[in-house]
Length: 113
View 1: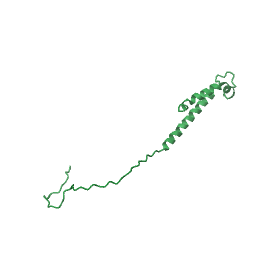
View 2: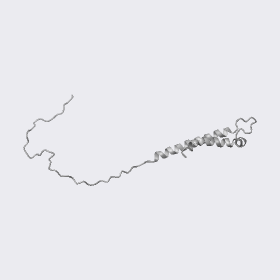
View 3: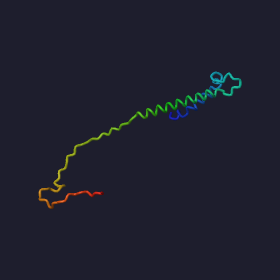
């Protein structure tokens, strides 16, 4: 089934060859000419061009539809409440005692000018 669209022009050509005599007698533009060398090939060219235009139009439609389709993945997270662990470790120094030193100068970043 996937290869059928790629053989479309082959099917147009095969149907032309099967009906070439009938096409050259009834449909061909040059059918009334005495020395008709066309033998209905003008209709074959029209059919192939029509098929190519339909293919191009279908590709454009598919491209437009592909641009409209968005896929959203829903991620399901099962969040669970974890009880915090209490520890007696002190992460910061306590300010209960006296200060060790006093700075009388204020920090100034270096200036380039």
